[in-house]
Amino acid sequence: MAPSSRCAHELTSRKKIERITTLMAFIKTATPKQLSSKLVEVWATPQCSITDVRILLTLGANPALLYENDYGNKTLADRVDAGSVCTSCEAKFQHFLEMATELYNVQFHSTPIEVNNGSTNDRTKKDNLTSDLIAMSLDGGGMRGLVSVVCLLFTSRRLFGDESLVDKVDWLVGCSTGAMLSLALAKGFTLTETFFLYWEMKNEIFLDKSTMARLFGSVVDKQTNRMNEVLKRCFPCEDDTFQNCARRLTVPALNIARTPAKLHTFRNYPIKVDGGTTSENGEEHISFRDAARASSAAPTYFHPHTMAEDEIFVDGSLVANCPLNILFREFDKSIQAGKDISLGCVISIGTGEPNETKRRYKSGNTLHKKGKYLRDMAVLLMEQVVGHEKSVIECTEDRCAAAAIPFFRICPTGIDVRIDQIDDGKLMDMIWETLLYLLKNVHIIDNLGSTLKAVAERPHDSPRLRSHTVQ
Image 1 (cartoon, one colour):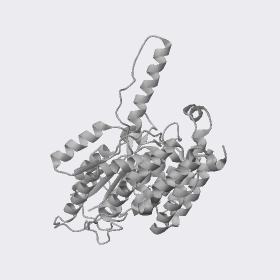
Image 2: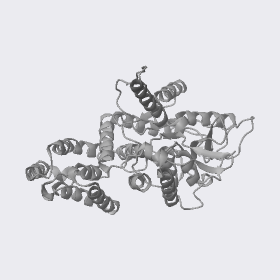
Image 3: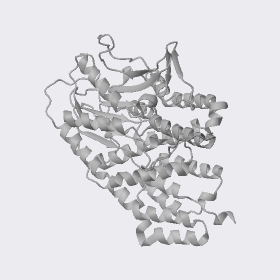
């Protein structure tokens, strides 16, 4: 078959990567108008895939031109006739045409709300009130962190017409990939910049090797070195520390220096510690780079992060993939330390979870059945490590309901992607499912906006203080 008549999904991996890399380089500097024009151009380009058009829509392209004079349908029909779009991909392009306008309008054509939650400078959060804190919890999940980024982008555009949602947050709590995202946002990355960060680091870090290759080869060595280089680029300054972060910041990791392993929490605010004493401002000297490396050191993917003889850390997801329990533990310990703080709202952003299915879990006496049992047991254990912690969510819902604290959980379903997935098409399929979930559940986002506005408008008699300042 001639190259001109091949569907994009039949291209070699190298050509697919080159095409998407070129497109992403364009998007980084493009204006919204240029993105929209590029969408029309890509739509008509032979061998440009559904991944290309979905990326452009996700990052702000207006699809309106595709519907003028039925351009989208006519051009798609021409490509199908020419053989550059196969039957399977045609269905995806058609679904894009069905959903694109609504997905765009629900984000960019809503009426923005105004929320000033007490800061003299809403961007830097240097003067937060210690009452009615807006707390955000970010789950772990490797490359599924892109799901969290898209959830935040969609929500922020819908509510504020821009990317300022994170500026309303007083307290960031993140584990594993959620730690990476929390620290990037605390440093000042925009949501779009974090999208590019995740999209690029997948190929910069992961080698797309099998579990056996990771266990018995040099993959872990290489991926650890790659992770260190990415973190140096993301957090290059010595000033990127918890001490210099103007809002509450919490990152859990698991210290395996001794048995049993012990949860360790990096923080920048005072709490009641073991023995009944009150810490000062946590571990303000800790760098963003060290905290991100410690909380993301997933076994079989990266080596543990050693900071001292008695400080050897692995992925915080092993104990708190959804760190809501960490958030409330830290909240309680702050109150025990005599700090007069309260929560105005808790926002939990997940990295997606698969649809519920009937579990394969059988035991038996034959070697074959025992092998299947071990496989099914491994799947069950991995589920608990990388997410799907419904009990944590249920406990949080109950606690927040009892204390009249508004709680919002945004976590798309139908997401079943490896934490080290680097295939652009599979990741974009994941993002597309995320967008459809958000569209279907836009009422949750609207309720969140109403709550943020109501919390911001509550009268406060207490003086303005940095949320982690010792009094």
